[in-house]
Length: 326
Image (cartoon, rainbow, N blue to C red; front, side):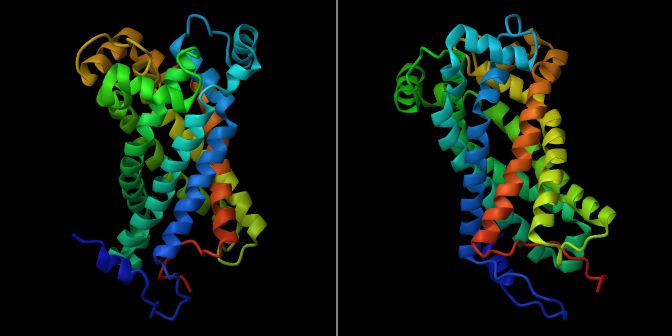
């Protein structure tokens, strides 16, 4: 089914007597993609030190076994404070690209799904729409993210491997080839990112609705500062939920990109071997506290920055509307 007619329909004026939304044209989607790229790049880059420690805890739990704060001290004591910026290059570049396709894609799929279903059905099915739009957008985004995430983990797990992104990627390609070098983690990254993104957008949408309702605030007439506060609060809730759901796959992703991890064989064979060696409980809890802190603050920051940039560019975000309310 072509999305072109849906894109056209999403730009048509509302004929039900309510204030119409849009137009949701190419300019709108580009603004959404730019805002998404910037919010993901800035937040992931800012939290790079936390990610370094979290990844070390996952890769070497026997050494980094004293918690998040102590982990910072261990990394600095053994490698210097500069080690906390390991992988910053691929993190900033990778997550700008991923955010571009993720946030821009969610807006595109969400609006067109809603347009296809109509206002009433879209309101009733807004959670499934969030989930479907997030899954579609994340799959596309992960195709571009995976090589950069593999490079980041290689640099974090072995800081002496290369000096940075530019030197690491050709080296990985030469040693391991395209598939093994850059897409060994594609399965786990999908298993991690798709449920993570589905939970992130669905929970944030539901949490924002609940906050507005509990506070008796109309989201259409709320001030920009109030909207930002709701975005940040709902983002924290969504981030923690998404972190818990996706953590086992995140641990596997960190392990599979470590040199020699899982031995020989297909990606699924190596993943199965690693999962068996580590055990389900450890997959679920190793580094979880650090990741909840990281993802909770990161997600809040992303939604806050995204909404701010959309406002600055003059874009009015799409909202699900209840046709039974005046």
